[in-house]
Each structure stands twice: as C-alpha cells, then as structure tokens.
Image (cartoon, rainbow, N blue to C red; front, side, top):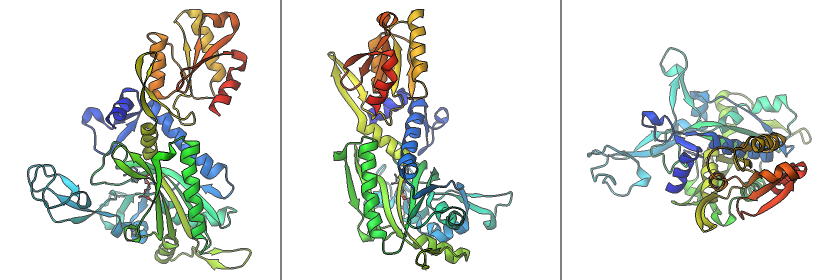
Length: 430
Ligand code: GAP
C-alpha cells in the first residue's frame, strides 16, 4: 500500500487535500492522471449500466437534501456508528467495533462508553440556523432516485423492470477514515436503483451480482482471483436491506468491500410515500395491477475502484537487467493509452512526432512526451503511470513513414506504417 500511495503522489494521481495547510484526514485531491483514471471508471460504468441497455435512465439529484428525506429514509436514526473517545493523553476517537477492551489502543488511556454518532454532515439553508433550516449533505445518492421516482415515471416511458442510475459526490463524517482513499469523508458514488415487480427481486438480485462481477473482470481487467462474493448474514444487514452481497477485493489490509449489491425491497418507496403523503405506486399498464416496486441496488464508490485498480496493477519486475515499477493497467482505464515519444529533441523529429500525435488525438487518451532524458527513462515513466503503448518516432521515420509501437507489459516492439497506426492501436486497445 505504501508503495502505491507514494507512486500516486509522485506521478500525479492522488494528493492529500489542502496539503500545504497540513491536509485533512479523509479528503484527497486527484491530480491529472487520477482525474483521467476516475473519468474512465465513471464513463465505463455509465456505458455498461446505462448506455448499452434500454432499461436504465440517468438522474442527477442535489447533494443537499432536506432533513425530512433523511428522517423518512431512516438515516437520521440508523446511519450511526458507535463512538468511543480516549480520556487519556491522546484523546483519539475510535469506532467501538474497531477496538476491544476498555483501553485506548494508542496510549492505553481509558475509553468512554460507546455512544452513537451520526455520520451525516449537517448544515443550514438560509441565514437562520434553527431546526427548520436544517439540511444534510447526502451520504448516498440513492435517496435522490426514490424521491424523484414519481417524476421519472411521469416524464419518461420507463416500464417496470427498469433502473435509475446516478453518479455523484457523497459525504460521510467517518469516525476513522483511512487506508488511503478506501474510506473517505467525501467520495464519489455510482448507484443503480433497479425496480422490479414484487417477487421478482431474487432473480434480479442474482442477475446484478453476476453482471457487476463480470464488469470488474472483463471491462476493468481486475484479477478474478482477488475478487470474491460475500453474502451478509441477516444480523449485519443495513436497516433497509432484505439481502446484501458484497463484491470484495483482497486489499493489502485484508478482504474489503468493493461494491455492495442490496435488495432494498420496497423499503424506501414505502417510507417516502408515507412521510410525503405522495402516491409512489406503479400502475402496470398490461395487468392494471398497482404496486410499490421492489428495488435491487448495486452501489460502488469511484475512489474505491480507483485504489483497487491501482493496487491490482502495481508490479515490480526486471527489464534489461534493470528493476522497474510498472502499472499493468487495462487499456480501458489507463490515464494515458498511447504516449508519443520522439527519440530526440531535434526539430525534424519533434515535428514528425507532433503530426503523429495529432493524428491520434481524439481517438485515444494521448500524451506527447518529448521532455528530458533518454528514451529508456521516458519508457520507465510511462510504465509507472501504466501507459500500455508508446509510439516512438525516430530518424528512420523520416525515411520510411513508420514508427515503433512498444508494448508496456512485454516491452516488445513492432514497426508500423503511420498510415495504419491508428487502426493497429485500435486493434491492440480493443
Ligand atoms: N446506497 C447504498 C450505499 O450507500 P454503502 O455500502 O454504504 O451502500 C456503497 O456504500 C459503496 O460506496 C461501498 O461499496 C464503497 O464502494 C463506497 N463507499 C462507502 N463508504 C465509503 C467511504 N467512506 N469512502 C469511500 N467509498 C465508500
């Protein structure tokens, strides 16, 4: 983990937030390559969950929502963790379920009895700071989909079974954020609420479990052996869930949740219907039956996928008798898919290399790398950020109108005519 954390900072993926002021625990910024990685993750999720299907539509609801929403959803009472504070020297706060005994794991001081701590960030809308103006930053995007359910039904042509998908920021005042971007206080969620007829939830639940697992393996290229399903026992289910399965990854700190797939039954639509006194039932146009749909929810954090991808891809090997650090990123998620590298800074070479770059721009995520040092050094830099292909422009290029494609994993090189370069790269990237 430390090696990956160091690499992400050194190479411009992830930085501590507000670092020059000492940083903030549980908050991270994404640098240029991190942004590209996150965008790729988001786009691939949207493509597979929304665009390539005809039964899912998108939504963007607000980050700030009134306290009634959270009272109805159960978050005001149930979205809590048990907190214990050290009364000794360090005054550290602990999640009660993360410590055993009554002594502080840090300084050995006595711990308070556990008390429940709500994880939502509270604020006020308008100048009056009283209970009538209380609002919360959303701890999940899901409630937006339930609150807008009637609007989507009434304004589109969706028919059960169908889904509403949303990507966006979520906020949780975690007592113990940590493991880098695994547990954050501000993070990005991607959630699908897939509505089905009551009684058809088990089948849909199984479908989404498998669908989501294949996405990690086939689309993101994550090692199947480091992924597993974990079925939650009844006693550890969230307040809204009938059944939940996590897709877990084998992190350096042990198996941990990557994505949760929950069967929320009709819990959310029911509680919002009751509290808002708004009819949220669905009228089946074929059978004329009226019912509250049940919902299957695959939910995952973008940051958690990002750290999973980076850890999964990190490797150290030896090339030409020299050790190298390499990220074996799948071309789908690599921040740079193709680096165009002129062999030297000579004008005629850089001009030819810029032309090659322009011919590829818009089709791939490209970087033009003419700066500093030997070609070997530049390859190493691209290996470290996970660039699967480098295209080298050399003096022969000026004669034969061909370039060399160098593959990151095998380091094999292949000579290709510039005229056929984009097609060859498309073939390689898939
Ligand atoms: N709407 C359901 C829901 O929010 P969750 O299991 O609490 O379920 C879903 O969160 C996913 O969000 C998790 O599987 C994880 O990928 C991500 N996630 C949850 N808490 C997080 C945190 N503090 N930091 C980063 N990602 C988090």
